[in-house]
Length: 564
Image 1: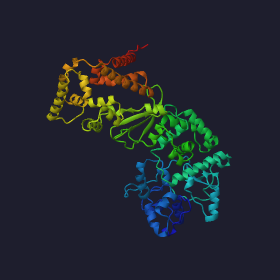
Image 2: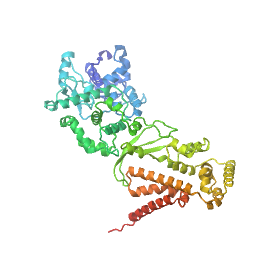
Image 3: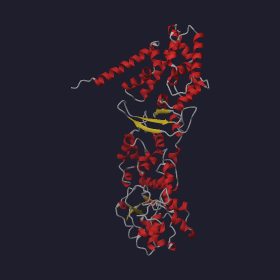
Image 4: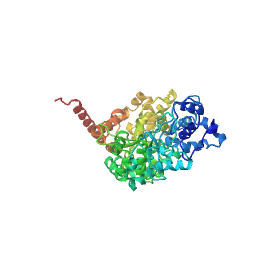
């Protein structure tokens, strides 16, 4: 029966080859034809991307039929399809293409779906005439069925819609009878600018259909970088929606958008407000018009012209900012606007397996650098806490050195060392730390306990975590010793600097005053050791008292507002 199977024409859709074969056989039931070829019962054959083609290609090897790879690349839209889906799904879809499903024994019902703006197969009238003159018949071309192709690159004329539905269950070959225009679209005059963009769109679409470009996960970050290059992000990384619309419209022109039947206002609105700048959530044509507008073509979009700033370097090569880790990362970029914020901003964040979680404002160079917020200082990641303590207790690094390694403020490291965690503690360890601390106190009988603490923080914090009651008793007498004024000034400045930098960062994140106050006072309310120190640090104490008072007044106004 396969002796009648036709050789494919150039750029012929796999469905079209099967349809021409069906016409040559005496079988009148298309479902039976499909079943005999694929050895599976299928309700219909996928048009752009069929299922289970390995069965039929295996049988056709003896007839010097094109190879499996050639058939997939030149006669299906599989590559086009996988360029718009997650990398995780690609192997699964490839199995479906070859065997009908992930498990070979399962029966496939339909082909993989591409989303079309048109409902029928498309054709070029001039190509149809040339085919009939050359071959005596015409056929459905693969490139004409690409959802983002609207023009014949050879004749530079708009494609027409045939009489055959792209969702038909039958095997219907192209013919002069069904390749009749259903619209008057080709009667319109198209200006040269629109022709140029439609040809460029067709060229880039062909590339997507022939190559696996692997830009799915990168598309959002790449779009942000190109928008930044074009000056379409404001100082806080938010897309300038009105300007984006105006420049897109000016770039392509009204004629172009009428031909592709696209409402640009809705596209820009959805991109900026509904899908959080996620280019992958736009339709195929919407994604491509963004890419061509931003970079000219897909190759330039992927490569991105280098920008000499920190944000560009970080997005292009995202790695953990923990200097002892530096793993490659996947970044999350999204616009944020909450009730406790003054305006919309765009943030970039990541979560690393080492325990580090950081967030930035995607703004200009100054804002990006100053907005780094290391959230993992308060995230009780066991591995992270263990790493910090190993650096202190085993490697014998200073707190300032550890802060540099993990890209933290020194006060964050202090707080981590005070945080309780399930540790294996035995009596020998307790005895060792007690003796070490007692010897140090006895060697310095006139020093205040804060001097002793910060000169031996690793010993103090171990006892604080694991033997707190004994530690409190051991420092009782040293509380009344005179404390060095110079030490207090340095410590007071250290705390105030921490508060100042924290407040500046919270301002960059556009939080309202109540939220800033709440976050600034958090460690000084939560941590016992910080509360105890504040009475000795006048400037820091006044600062914390002030923000506490402001926050309490805010709560009082919020919950005690009289109802009119």
